[in-house]
Structure formats: C-alpha cells, structure tokens
Image (cartoon, rainbow, N blue to C red; front, top):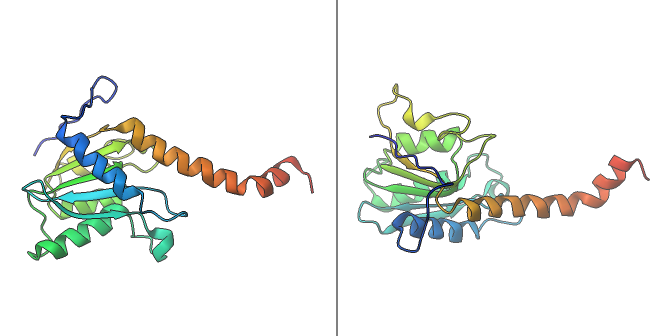
Length: 180
C-alpha cells in the first residue's frame, strides 16, 4: 500500500472529514492518561469503521515501557477480533506520531491505515525521525495520513509538559539560580 501524506499547513480539516472524526476519538482517549503519563490517545477502528479499542498512554501507571497507547489499543483490538494478531483492514488513529515500537507493531499487525495528529520530531517513526511504515524491506506498508487536527494534538502534548515543568519549577528554579 502506498502512503498518502498530506501537508497539514495547507489542508483544511472540517466536520465532514472522516479522519477528523477518528482523531476526535483519539483525543478523547488521550484524556484517560494519568497525570504522569504523556496524554497520547489511540483508537483502532475495524474495517467497517466501527471502534474496536481505545487506549491512552499508561507507561507510568503500569510501570511498563511498552504501555504506549498504540500498543494497548492494538492488543485490545486483536483480542476483540479474536482472529489472532492480524488487524487487516483496520485503521489506527493516534494523537501523536508513533515511535519505532508502535510503528513496527502497526506494520506487524497489518494495520491498513495510520492516521495521526502531531509530528514527533524526537522519536517519530512515521516520517519525522524514521519512516518504518514505508520501508520497502518490510512485507506490509500501511497508508498514512498525518497532520489531522495537528494543532489540537500538539497542544495536548505541549500543555502536559508545561504543567509538568510547573510542578517541578520550585526545586528546579532554586537549583538553577543557585539559591538555597
């Protein structure tokens, strides 16, 4: 399958955009992330477009480095379908560009499409830092649509880190300024 990357700067997402509706569900899923987990939401939709599974990041909550929203949602969807590990014809909608682990899991699960919101320049593996999903050496390449509701998705992440820094500010400010 080919990739279908579009430029979010020139694209106009409106209420009639089916991918924007998928992303709204992923944004809602992100709300379930704990206070210490980066609020990333992922939703898997079946071939019929109906929601199969949703999850939020839970690495801190579970003490598990693999508890990314995408991994948790893919596991749930596979269990619900009951056909093994293949999620053929399914779409993964996620608020933040998947990392190498999550992009690899989507490829291995045979996800048909990945729709994501904000790019992740530090760890993104669907076009930013790496591009796992289009590697011609792999036997499956999902279609990709990036930048869906990008501003909202990016603000969710930025807001989390602003709050995290604010919680750390008193100690950090003292240490940085040399005041004791």
